Image 1 (cartoon, rainbow, N blue to C red):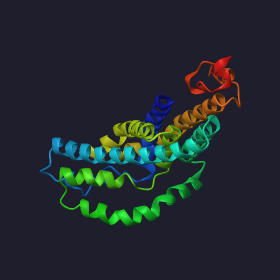
Image 2 (image 1 turned 60 degrees about the vertical axis):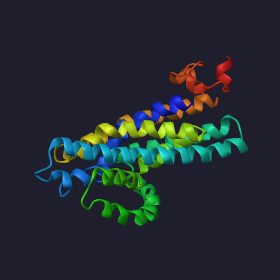
Image 3 (image 1 turned 90 degrees about the vertical axis):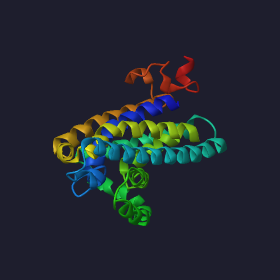
Amino acid sequence: MSAELAAAALGMGLVGSLHCVAMCGGVSATLCGAGGACERPRDRLPRRVGYAAAYNLGRVLTYVALGALFGGWASLGLEIAPGLPVRTGLRVVAALAVLAVALHLAGVFPAYKVVERLGVPLWSRVAPLARRLLREPTPARALALGAVWGLIPCGLLYGTLFVAAGAGSAAGGAVVMAAFGLGTLPALGSIGAFASSVGSWLARAWVRRTAGVVLGGLATWSLLAALAGSGVIDGAYVGLGPAHACCGAGSPHAHR
């Protein structure tokens, strides 16, 4: 199960990282963008890339830790109520969360911003630390800044954490979030190193809408796979045959 969820999280990171650029104001550009250390004339490209690499490593490590936390939390629920329904419920909620992000990217669900406010209380406590880490940046400070910035309120991150919970274990949740973090690197990593040239392009409306459509397709597929795996719908009708991995050994379809 973790392999399928990790693959889905990787896709969410690849496509949804455009959500981070558009909705979170280009977080990666904070360290190496305008006004940051990497834009000083004496800083050459290798140093800019080094700062971006350290920052993104810290960010991904925070995602992995959160994934382990949510996966461990879900494992407790599975021990109390073992079986397919609980796991399926987690995957359905995750798919709906990703679908909500996709609709927001497409510009038809602005109310989704309310979800991102859930993490504001925590972020208000750690934001002063992030500001201190921006002073006189070093690679170590960039790593720490990335770890702190992994806690910034982000609706896509919250949706992916539900996917991590669906893994049903701390190790599985960590793997899922590692895949998600890796998926975000092409967009957010490039912004960190080349903020001035990449950030404005990724913030264009058509890029966000295209990302929303792709992410919406992924969310729909995940939802259908979860429903097929639980036997609610016949997987054969949506391209998920009876032997599809998403159906799992416990699915009624797996024994036909």
